Amino acid sequence: MPRVRRTTKGKERITVSLSRKSAKFLRTIRAEVRSPSMSALFEKIVADLQGKTEMEQLDAKIRAYYDTLPESDIKEESAWGAVGEAALALEEEDVQRPGMAVAES
Image 1 (cartoon, rainbow, N blue to C red):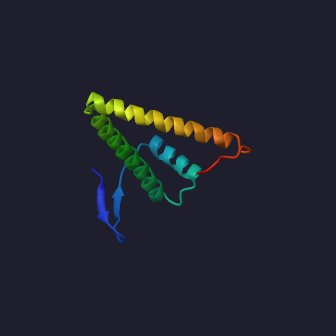
Image 2 (image 1 turned 90 degrees about the horizontal axis):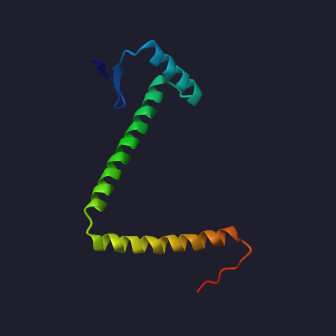
Image 3 (image 1 turned 90 degrees about the vertical axis):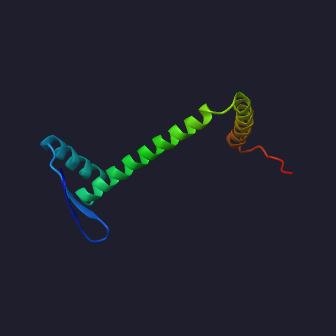
């Protein structure tokens, strides 16, 4: 179990033991990303993992929402999606042809 000791600035000091292979890997990554310290590298790793976890949870909630929609709502969502796709396609055409003037109302 890691030792935990409170430090200033709302941080905690955590001591862990890693295999030599893992420690070497972390030192290599730290050099590659030019992290100012091993602590800063761990903060980045934790933030990335937390972000990934939060995205996975959000995806699961969105999936659950759409899985419970009645068929009529799914058809309506699909229709609105087609409208959005058409609008984006027109917008992309305008961007690809910058010499063409677009009339505004």
